[in-house]
Length: 447
Image (cartoon, rainbow, N blue to C red; front, side, top):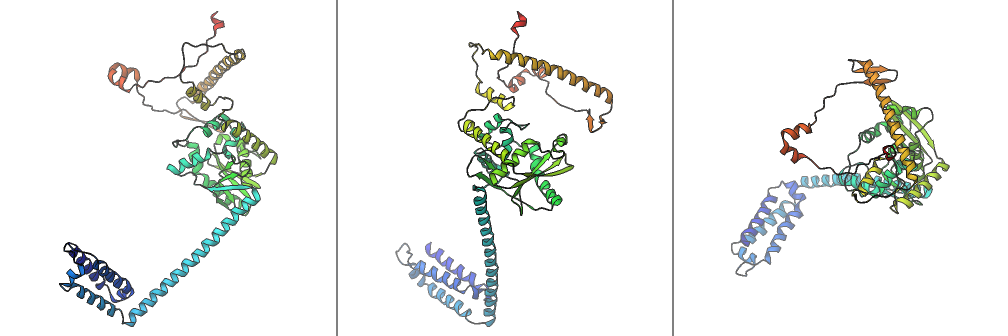
């Protein structure tokens, strides 16, 4: 068996190289001879069942001498022909040219790398920024999850406004939960956030067009050297300036917040946070409003505001996040969810006397609920009057407004009918929900 395999291997190798053209065979001369000679050397030490060297077995039939003769023939066929030599020289020249291009590319890459290192060193020396970790933002799958987990380790620019209590959409309590609750999966991105990401490049390009400036995407994850909990992921850097660009999109209803020199407070704090973390001297903020109005504004460093940002973020990070002590409860859904989870279980045998101060809080709550009820009634009255004015029309216009009253088809399961006609199926698909209902009963009115 070993003899047959070895002989087949040798024969195949010789035939393969013998079938090559002269020029190619000349180029591969050493490879051909080394392959064949190597195989012969290798099988010399192999043994068959009768403990005889394979070469002895092969020699009995003259195969080894035949193979050596074929090797000599191949050597001789490569020793002549000037044309073959010329082709070899041309091939060598091509390889030399290719090598030259490769070396040139290497030199260029080294130069770029040196510029990057110098730039990075310059950032550290001038702005006190350290650990410029390169991370991919956005992305998907594990990269996205890792990036979200990395963000938990610090306070970013978009967190700053909420921590200072000037963000309309997010509260300090929500930021606390985002920094302390484990992230094990990627939540679905909101429509507003999704389209904000999609239009970021559009806004950046329009900024370049309107200002004549050039910007570059910067995916570095910045950390402040002195306050490592302060981090930043900027949208763009402005070329030729020590400046950053923040790209935004806004709803048409928020256009008034951008009139004149105004910048929404939360965005202003975000840019100032970036200026401090990156060490930039100024920032630009560009916004596309309602998909049809473009505005850009320049933001100078405000050292007094930056000091407030640092102190507030420092207090929040050290006294709440690190100590796992939540900030004051607020009216956010995050705070409500937190309480529902923390006090999920209840004991019907326990009742307590609330502190005296809570009597005033309950009175205030009842008054607010009554006010909300009255305001909702007033709003519904105005809505009904507008509907009456529209009549059969689906769309109406007032100055600066478009009013819609359109037909909407909605298919819902009639649970009552399902229970009556298909009680067994109803039982199978019915899902039990357990929660604690909050209610206030006015005992003073009952008495």
